[in-house]
Image 1 (cartoon, rainbow, N blue to C red):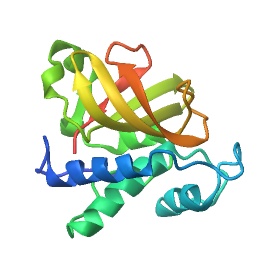
Image 2: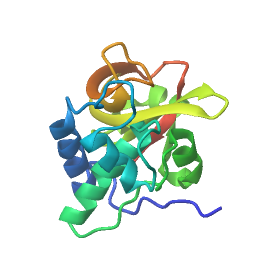
Image 3: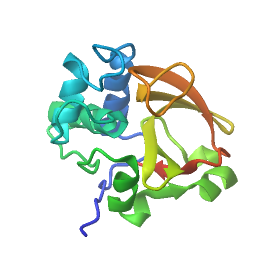
Image 4: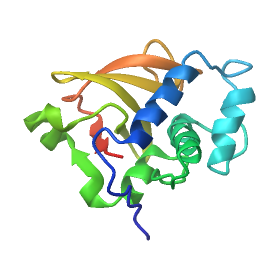
Length: 174
């Protein structure tokens, strides 16, 4: 399996900053009809990773945000082209992964625009883009979620997550 190399421009990179701005502009986009894993923008997110409407789309949302950013600055998209958050984690080269333990030891290594990965077991995951970090609190933008933080929601929303959340696998820096 080939591992994704996010490149050398990490830690507040133009690509990550722009991807975050794009994600911020998507807050409020939702499935139509609710619960369908489809709709005009949801279908675009899924199409970006080669999936048809009807699939869970949190990872597709992150990929799409980075793809839009990469197109604007004429760069390669460093995010693994997959619809699965856990698959993205596995396809990313280890030197671009920040484990939960590393993040807890030094939260200052985290930057806005980085991607977080949650694991619910048996290959089920959830992901989004970090908007802001305050201590061990992550402010995030997530697709396929809702106001209660579900991994099977219906819109792009802002959340707060903790670095010490037992579901956090880690963070990918771009």
